[in-house]
Length: 539
Image 1 (cartoon, rainbow, N blue to C red):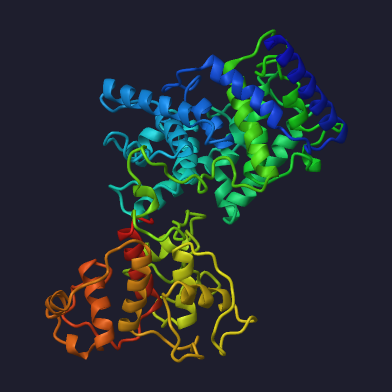
Image 2 (tube, one colour):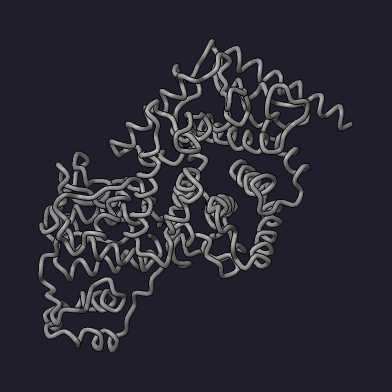
């Protein structure tokens, strides 16, 4: 019966392969291939543990393909990981920090929290630049991919320092690019397809940076130039499936179709070439001269085909696991906010490294940069943030909506906010979630400026959506605000919010005056929003 099943499956796989090869474009459903490969992996690796083969990549690929069906498999891995950490004093590797990156990717895929595996924070080692880069280019590439996969911060380090670490990894990767556009595993060596594809995956989230975009284009030209006549790739002059898998993954990560003319040779794509390594048992060969399937080749082919399937279905990229919510039973939930937050509130990933030329002397500089890197705040053109100017009600609606990751859109109830206004969807969203109100039943006054007490009220409402406790009794409010000489100048409707903001360190209590009617600046609003998001564990 098993032989009949395998024969039928192989015929189906063959027909898919022929159909794709003829068209030169991947339109066929890859589920049959993935299901066969999934069976192969589960059979060969029934007890996954910490390992580069038969470990994280198997768990990662299966979870990114179908997380629900791989739940039992993930549970086995998670228990084995805990046992491994216990027997190794919580250390995955002392010289090869890619061990941490690989495990973080697997944990993120299955919905576990890498910052809390039986009390061990596996993210912390990736903040050590010297140790991460010790083993060569592989270190920063996979550290960057791992940190970005779940928008992770290292709790013991401030956000600005983590962004600086990311920037160093990006800079290290860019500086190692060879003149032909590719990368090599060791300095001075010839460029190779595998490591070039891996570098592209690491840089894929930073295409908005001019120098990174240029490096990516050069690398794509290099990969196009070395593609074999059958659409495949070689490593050390040996044609192999792993090189095909890495390039296919990189193209999908960059949202580039396999049928892009740059990557079609004689009517063949890298996908066509990868299928030529497919064995009758559902596994993949390393080379075309092999007689049996190879575990490492199969695991890499599996996640590459999963990347292609996700790309074709319009899902998030393979290494972008913002769509992978944490599951109960897998440690903590610190990376995704407080337990009681509104389910619509989502942390915003770091999209690019950005700063402004006019914030160097600004006390809020690091917080502004951290928000800008996530697309929450923006400048006013020509690399200017204008930190000391006031903020309008429309601008605040935009940054608070983006900061909480709320989907924008709909129709407003205000006569002075029209569909042609850039802030139209933000005002509607902020109003819908109860963060802002109008100045009357029909007017919003989008260009009006915001006072400190108004900012406190709106930030307080946003904090409540994030799961923070914002309700303070009258006595608590009076006790907190009594430390300020002018607290009676604050309107009654704002005092509870001001007390919350001071007590939660969203506002600094270093001054003896509140100045509730002071028009807050763009820098001050940025600091308040940053402090609130950090307290809500959304940064």
